[in-house]
Image (cartoon, rainbow, N blue to C red; front, side, top):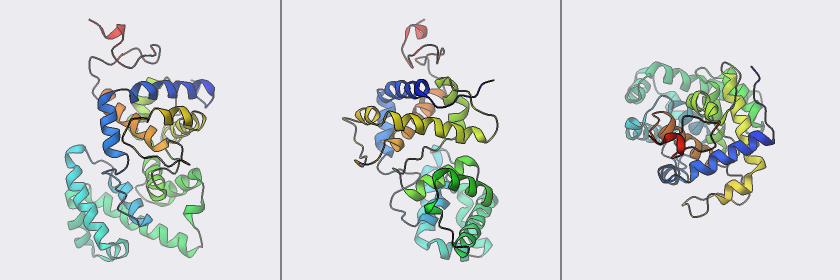
Length: 266
């Protein structure tokens, strides 16, 4: 098995895929609803520590729970990170309980606080690290932080348009095969796919930005459209790959179409 590496062909394949995904009205609607003000990671939260916490707490939350998640996150943010970590265990459990996986989320909170305090004591500024260094250190030092959690923590702490494309499990198991990408086994697959996607956006930034014309999204002039690309891919994955409808071509990546091609006709 040969693992896919970034090159012009893979970059072009990502561009073609995103171009078709972005033309789907239901994908565009989700992107527009979540681009400038994401409900999972709202821009109203400004403390980077709370942003890293939110990135971890947002895992294993489905859409039916988004209102509950938003309420818990708002309550935690109102307290502030320091006051949150000063709660006794029972108070913290009561706050987190509506999200489920209470002990795991509590462990993540305390481990995150301990890690950030230790880094600060050692004079380490994680904001100065490049993305790969941050993600590696975060995964290593924060209990409960997988690669995908560390990627989300890096992105949310640095802002939507920092250039990081987080990769969840469905992107590894469903999106990568649809793109014709072969990834390494295990957790490293998340990082490998992140780098493949970011490489493609760097090469095709102008073409991808052009796809946003007419969409209700705001991308800073100096930023590559990584956040927009992430949302386009993840909502295509959720809408078309998690429960494939009849319109989805099953011969990806051999067939360049995503939907409504000759292979989908009865």
